[in-house]
Each structure stands twice: as structure tokens, then as C-alpha cells.
Image (cartoon, rainbow, N blue to C red; front, side, top):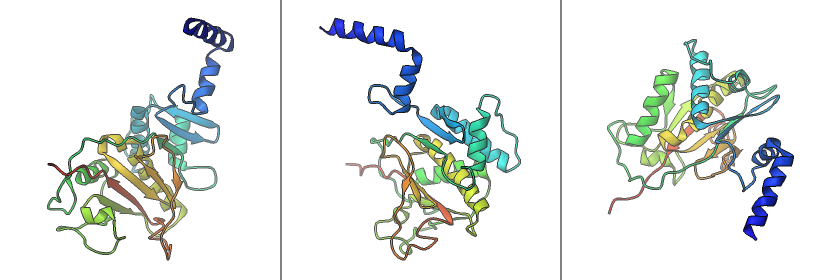
Length: 238
């Protein structure tokens, strides 16, 4: 019976052609894995591998600083969307599937007040974006100023500020947010929150989702003036 089913499926694919497979991918069918990353442009979706997303977001970040970037193998439509955002406003255009490593060990604070994984994120950001306005951590750790279960208290979170809240600053914030998502797997990023939106490594399908800020839901709590990034905590060693 299985041979007959496979034969029929083969005939269907022959008649419908490769476009049928592409349609299944576009609709997120459980039969076929979708792309690792997607850039939304005014002309439609551009699918990228994770490596392509890393290259593209890094190139856009370097270009924004006036630095040289090799973009010969990157779709110009994707680069334009990442640099300019959606038509008419700043906002999210790139997302990647979420992956969260489950074999990490819990880490202690370093001298900076960050865990080694969080420090790795800061170092990687600085290499691409240069000096930034950072907060949410300090030597010895922080013990107040955030929610009760905030990852800032564990030294696992960094805030990167883009003040005041303007369309241009929001666009710059999204360039960083996209870069963090593209590199999340390498840097063990858990959450990226910005501009009323969040991305989570724990959501396998990826995507940006509405972020519900706690009262009084001001610019800071809504993450309108800063990108929040935190890293996976890991498990306590036994």
C-alpha cells in the first residue's frame, strides 16, 4: 500500500512541478521545513539561510556606520528592507526560526556584572556597531529597577538605548534587533524586545509578536527607547 501512495505522490509532484513544493514551504506546511529566516519586502518575502541572514544584517549595520561591507552575494531587496524598514515607518522585517540550546550550564557574573554569555553578546555587538549606549547591568550586578523576575538581576540582559524615540532612532534600533535575531543561535540569545514587539528563541516558528508592557506602559516599559536582549540561563550544575 505504501508503495502505491508513494507512486501517486510522485505523479502529483511531476504534474504540479517545483512550484507546488514552494507553495508548501510558503504556507508553513508540516510536510516540509520552512526557511530559516525571512525578510519581508514591498515585493514579497525573501528567504534566507541563517548564514545569509547573518551576512545581510552585518552588512546593513556596517553600511549604517559608513564602513565597507561585502554584499555581492546578498539580495539587494533584502538589504534595502533591512536598512529602511517597512514602507512608511520603522519596524520589523526580518525573523528567524527560534532555537534554544538545552545543554548549557548556569553561569556566574563576571567583573562587568554580566555572565560570560551576555558578555559575549556585548563584545560581538561592539565589533559590528561600535560603542553604544548600554544599560541594565553594572559591576557587582543590579538589584532593582526592573521587574521581579528580570534577567537583568542575573546578569543575563543588556539594554541598548536609542533616544529620543524618533522614527530614525527606531530604524537604527531595528537594525540592531534584526542583527541579534540573525545571530541568536551563535550567541545563545533568548529574547529580543523592542518597539512593542518581541522575538523568542523558544518559539520554533520564529516571528515577531506583540509585547504587552506592564503598567504604566511608558516608553521604557514598552521598550520604545531601547532594545532589550537577554541570553539563555542554562542549568545548575549537579
